[in-house]
Image (cartoon, rainbow, N blue to C red; front, side):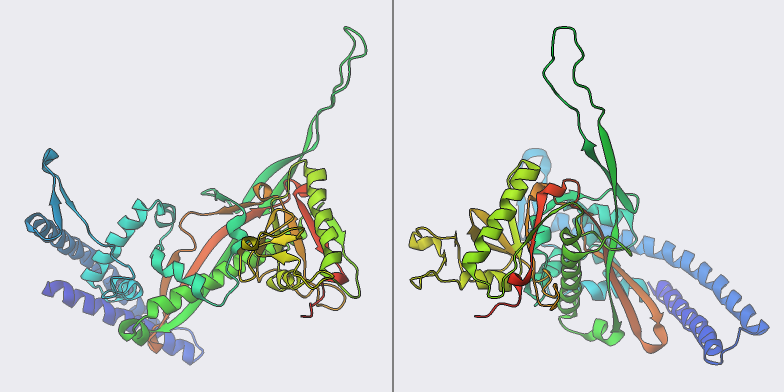
Length: 450
């Protein structure tokens, strides 16, 4: 549509003129002159008129494209299965953006639809929104002006050399409420009492229940990149590189927050800082696996004793699991053994090679490793920590479809630079039942030697 192309070009030139006026004044460290201010207002008025007209013409063009597409689908015979019931035609159509379909780029389409008025790119973005809604990830799409990143791009985060989110994946994941920047949970601190009734008709035991309100903040985790227009318009594989790196960074940050977050300055409150948890101290100048094992059992029994429910997860740094797996008994045999060797009298079982949900069990409790577990604690700043928890009490609220919000901002248009921002919201409540957490610390957990 020639008229639409002309209007889009004029709108682009107006934007460049507006940026030039403002930038010139900024470079000269002055305010706009009266003439410049008048010109800027005139340009803004014309821009609004063009935006309205362009939107109308685009709607007509998109409608025409949809009609043409529908006609083509009805007439198509390849890869189509026709069912007799109700004259329904079922087609197997690939997703708009996928690893198999590298002929189109999500980031390039997002950019071209917003800044170049590319109708084809806008149509693909619109179809992608519909696909995201069918995946039940529409909470992100409907509540914000951003767009859900295609799943195949976010999945690439697992391939990067980052700590990932193994502990976050093991928590009890709950949907984040649609509104508010805090979540309140009531914790009973004084419960009802019960006692034997002394005689018939005598008073029964009565104690009023009292609770404490736990309030935790919803944290915002974000990652930004400034990208040249050349990289977006002419780059190959830019989607995979950028999305994987940003999603990986955000996953690692969330993992760090739910482990060592302080709960202040916008941070989550991590398991390391749960108030009222049990502390188990392992002090040893020459640490050994045999001496650490009773401390792990002590942490497990403390959860049993204080929560009256079993611990079901041991969280540690990969180096600590390596230390445990390198331990030998008095006859030189490994203390933690592979399960396929039918181990007897072992402290634990499971494979040596593993990260995250390792497959290792110590005293029957699964072990998860995470690079976000601190290794700079203690007087020498070289101690790590071991956390024994009950997963059902580790409440992690996340919004569906995140991390997935993307914004483009041409704030550095004169430099052909585009800003890309992705962010997510999360809230952790681990202190609802402090007895569900036991932390092992001390000089026995200094940097291990192998």
